Image (cartoon, rainbow, N blue to C red; front, side, top):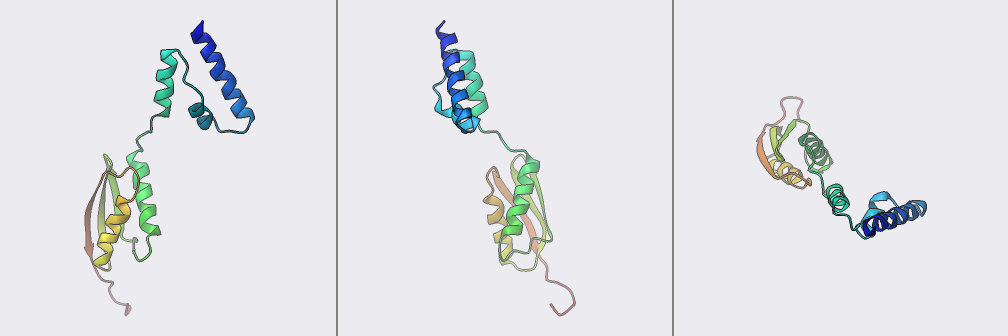
Amino acid sequence: MGSRLGGQVVGAALAIAIAGGAPCADAQTTVSPPVDSSAQTAAVATAAPRRRSDTMLAGDVRRALVRNPGLNSMNIHVQVRGGIATLTGWVPQRSQIERASSAARSVRGVRAVSNRLTVRTSHGGGR
């Protein structure tokens, strides 16, 4: 009976929080956990942070490279496997190799960076 009452209290608190405009995730974290152990396990499982996919991480690394001032990321290729980002391709200046590594490392979820970038200057056009 206590388990049922705990579930009713959680449900009522959640309904009040939703009616008040609070997002569900916030309402769930502010309510006391229910007495039922299976409900506690489910609540913990949904609250645990998810590991982001390698594809998502690769996209985030590409965005970090593009947003980095002073870094020409046009010829940098990104591949992520198991949270390890590999940078291949070339940049026009040696200083940009370290900038690219730093930008990739700054992405949440990237465990390590393998930087295989090389320096290549532009050809022709007086640049």
